[in-house]
Image 1 (cartoon, chains in turn yellow, brown, blue):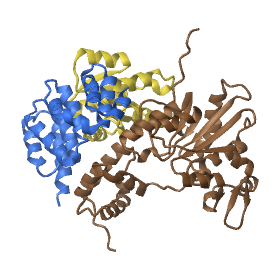
Image 2 (tube, helix red, strand yellow):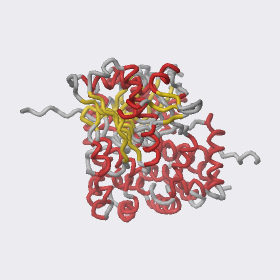
Image 3 (tube, chains in turn orange, blue, green):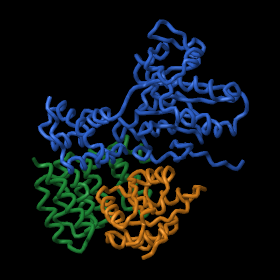
Image 4 (cartoon, each protein chain N blue to C red):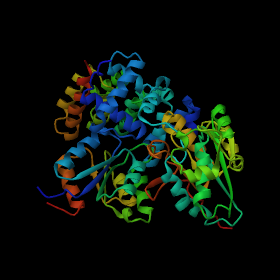
Length: 129
Length: 284
Length: 139
């Protein structure tokens, strides 16, 4: 198993079970995991602690994933260029284009296999297997 | 009284997830015993026959049960220089930004809401006098507001006991208070008169609007207790009471992420602070 | 605008917010859902219609509105949804809420759902976790 122990991933999703599912997948591959329940909390966490990757859902209360991305990318801070992997139940070209336009690095359609998530996390953290 | 019955891990997780969603407070496994005791106190107080019944009661937000439970987890004492890292942020960062476009003599308005018995607005006044070199350059107005007229009356009188002053150095106490006796100190008249106290319900726009617009608002440890709808209304009112580019500080366990998307989030020296966006310049 | 609607909380204001659930703009969907969440009594009147919508994305967002119902009602309504739901993501959204509100009656419904979608790894995980949460509370 590759050493991901120094890599930190922030999961932003308003569903507790989804966060638990991703956490299990990422921790099994040695990642350190943080959580946020919506885009605004995600921004706060990113401002307070260092992360290597963000996995963000689209539909969340208070601040959705697209608004989160736009806000993050528009701040002139080092953290603004962190890789963001967007997850969504929506698979239409419009949704994917919206995410890309807002600054997403990649887009995965739910449901996502745990192995797949861990694989992409490793790639975006710079450690492909 | 015997030890409280233990919560199962799943009951604990259910509750922890609910509280995290509702308030942003995180309860990890390590806090389980601490949480259990307080939950069983509430189960007792509500005469609930089981955790399940209590949890359904909690979810229904009936008779402020969420407030009661959160109260059990938070320390609600008020005292001078409470959360002083925010006061430090005020002078180091927030006021610096605010005065960037002000001229000497321009007003700076700071709101402490709720102000309770006055510790917070007086702390702000004292902190500025002690720590801000430009305290005489601008026309500083500090307003303290609360829904409770009794605490406002006490605040206007300005008499405090030992516990309220525990974070202040003897020098600061000597400079800004006079001792009435061994147990009580009163804020000096000059300082007392420099803070204006008004009765305001944060959820009532017709009461908040007349307070005008502020450069900085301290709204600590009150929004967390409101239900979703009230929190949102209060946040909109507070937004209206901020000048464009003005700042609002919440309590350290609170976050706008559970309240409203209106504000920008900023980080300054270890503190998260929220800001009303600057207005875009209009072409003339 | 959406907060003003929530303050008014009439059937009319719910009707104004509802179409935005279908919006292609994620921000509008979020604001509409937040507004509806803030007026639970009024939103509840539209719930069965929303849970029956032909668009699975709408049904999914509607599950969140059910969260605000009293515990027993939420479990019943979402249980009924799951039994006839063909979209696994919508089921997963309902299961997420049942983990919070569910009771013993929910358990067989969850089990049947997992059997219908054996190839959805998240749904399988969600049913297992939610069942665990529910099972232990019944003492």
